[in-house]
Length: 166
Image 1 (cartoon, rainbow, N blue to C red):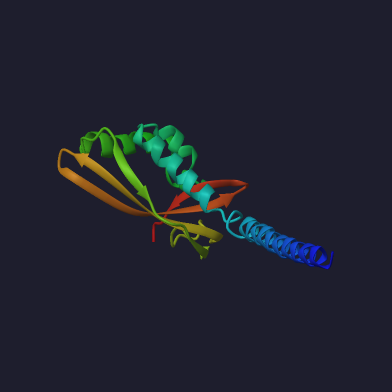
Image 2: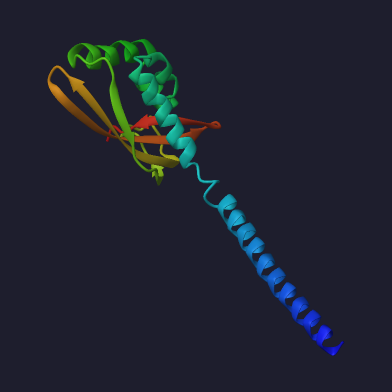
């Protein structure tokens, strides 16, 4: 009987130890999830990447009207819609002789107090993200790569694109 009691105590002790290990594991996973949720997932890098991807996807399809819609108001003031559509098509499709291109999107880097140009009519923006985009063209002049820093900011709840003119 004493032996049975000892076996039961050891068994109970083993169960308690295993339960503690499982509890610690579950709590660790929950803590990792909470940290991820409030740090990584709240960073706008996915939204920034998505708007740039959408912009260049429209450009690949020569849908310059839709890509123009993703411009920040500063860019829309710089390029009228009709002018942008005609000029973009003229330069890339007619002069370069390309029908499409491939592109790579880099990582977003946060910048504060950014200005599009030195002109006083474009006041600084508080929070902008700089992303390097590389476009690869196979043109009548050979393979061309255009490397451009693209800037993205949240304007009235929508992520929009800017280019620098400094």
